[in-house]
Length: 292
Ligand SMILES: [Zn+2]
Image (cartoon, rainbow, N blue to C red; front, top):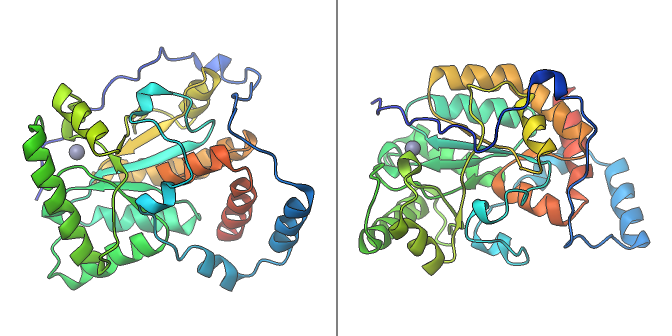
């Protein structure tokens, strides 16, 4: 089943001409970052020196829920702080109908990169074994799952959103077989950020995720955004073209991230990394390992 295509909003910043993309990288201020103590730093580095394939597999068997955000101080909306993720490149995938969710997940996982999925639960049949298997694997690999409504209805009232969010959460709990599954991040269908949505997000202590980059951009656009103190947030859908774009650009996005001492990852990993530096080392090891 193919739904109508969601329009990609024009980026919220003026595009920087390609010839300027080499301009010097200025690190973003990160006031919350507390340097690690030397013994902790040493123990982390030692840990990474001896990392094995088994460690990597085990390390990424984790689940992102509301609890994961406990020690992170997030605003209600990425718009409140466009530099919230530093130079990290946030990957998000919306709607998730058809076979392409599987291809997107495989392409990301192969490179050791996480992402945030914003599915509509109407496409995720809990009676379909393949669907259940795929989404359990997505969740258990440390990918994040956010709210995008059960059936892609935009402009709902607060009451409707409350009801739909309950249904969505319940659906995912059953599908994933985890009664503790919970949601921190949300994005409305069609990017319909109306007053009701914004009020509802605050009432429920959610984190509204906008976007500023899609498959109509080259991967270097991530640097153009970063140079303007705007964290790149990539949106992809379940279209064939988007999967192609990902396969063609992921390697370069990873290289851009590494040059900026940052990561490509889910909303959660990108937020976490901007507050706690050691995730970068983790990302380096993981992606280098996966790319080999
Ligand atoms: Zn959508």
